[in-house]
Image 1 (tube, helix red, strand yellow):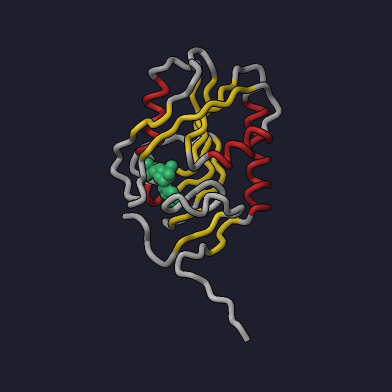
Image 2 (cartoon, protein in one colour):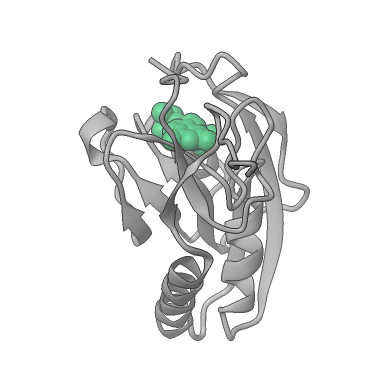
Amino acid sequence: MITPTTTPTQPTPLLSADVIAARVRELGQAITRDYRDRDLAIVAVLSGAFVFASDLVRAIDLPLTVDFLGVRSYGDATSSSGVVQITHDIARSVENRDVLLVEDIVDTGLTVRFLIDTLKTRSPRSLALASLLHKPSRTRAAVDIAYLGFTIDDVFVVGYGLDHAQRHRNLPYLGVITADRPYT
Ligand code: 5GP
């Protein structure tokens, strides 16, 4: 008999696709309530938030625009230096608009802190954050997450848009990589 083997990098399921979908629907409903009669500009952070953002915008029943902000904060070595580089800027002005920044995960908080400070200089009418995940035990920068999917422990997660060395983004669920702690 052939026994299936798992590789050391096989993610261990943490949050199923169904659980994620239900939570994203709830967040979409909350945003729909809060942003009625406002001028909603979604700014999604690439690359990790692309799956979350695409599901979230379809759960929001309001007129909105979607733009993308590419950043590099973790390379393949995956350690947070706090130095964030914008690799792709938003294409449209957010001046006087109600910006909702959509991020995959708040870990140390340094990336989001930098992005919020950067977007504030663009004179939005309001600026709030939606994040799929938060690791409070690692967070060093004060960050207010208005719309949070899930709080998780200090583990390295992949799937649903999140990668490890550019892999696993297409997993429909969120899983934990346990074999090697891929960041410090
Ligand atoms: P922070 O600046 O908050 O430390 O890190 C934010 C970025 O680090 C996230 O946008 C994400 O790209 C990456 N990151 C932090 N924790 C994880 C994790 O558990 N899994 C993955 N795939 N990326 C993470």
